Image (cartoon, rainbow, N blue to C red):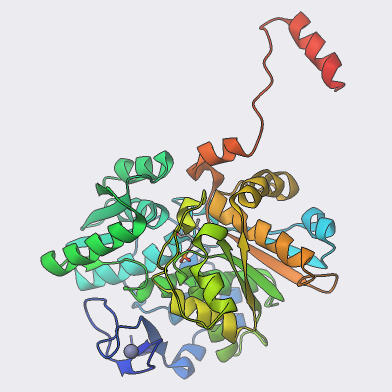
Length: 411
Ligand SMILES: Cc1ncc(COP(=O)(O)O)c(C=O)c1O
Ligand SMILES: [Zn+2]
């Protein structure tokens, strides 16, 4: 791991040695991020080397990841998810181009698989016995999915209101699941205390700098699948802010490595009731807690755990933030499904709601190429999806009943 130089605090910029147990900056409590020797990485990662690489997973970017080449890895294939052109949706908003990155197509059906693939490779390297995390649901179900069969245990803290599908995934994959009577924020604090008391490896967002490393591969992939072009705007659903800051790190690194030539502007999309990052971006940059109430459970966060990094990412990119209502989020689910064939969970559909709002405000137009990061599958939360559409038509089990209906429908 000669290419890894250490860790840098995103708040005070102090550098620290890579530590065994992940935690925050000893000097100021800020979140840490991995620092690399990009000259060393450049020798192994360029457009030509990638074109020759037959690996169709996030490990094709292993030269820029903080684990050794020969490290043990979780088995499921993470990454290299589809990137779709969406000309109908682009046309409906008058955009030049719209691309949709469907990360619901990962093994546990969310973007979080990218983070956990890297975190677990690191945990295996360190031979830890127990990995723990707090999660709104997806980070945990992903951890459970990728950890099944590995020589370690997972202990998961989720808010008791997490959607059924996510809880089912956790239990099916064999994690020890603790449903906390409280919010995600309560689960987060309890998990941190448990990790400190029992010496468990804490993968919770913000605390573990390796999650951002896995997430940055979303940016690498997006650009590679665009033939190393970079979109003008990238719309990212934001809760804690770790995905958007990871994506930003990816875009910045690609340019640093000389693989791409420019940077996109990032748009943080939040739910109105959970818009701490959006408020900070519009105001003084300081994160203040909000209620966190929204139908989009994955981005329901009172105090974003990587909020400062998210604000930095949006500001450094020259981007902006958008807050969308629950009604707009629910309406976005069938629009995205019918317009681009992608079934997204509410948090992920928020990206499309955010783009619509940005276009209506004149922030995206006929010269804009935009990309949406669809971070989770609609099958994660069918109850919310059902709220966004009508009921099926009822028909008797005979051809006459059907005939009456067909006539009424004029099919
Ligand atoms: C589907 C989905 N979208 C978006 C997010 C937001 O990511 P972050 O909390 O890193 O901002 C999450 C996080 O749980 C998620 O599961
Ligand atoms: Zn610091």
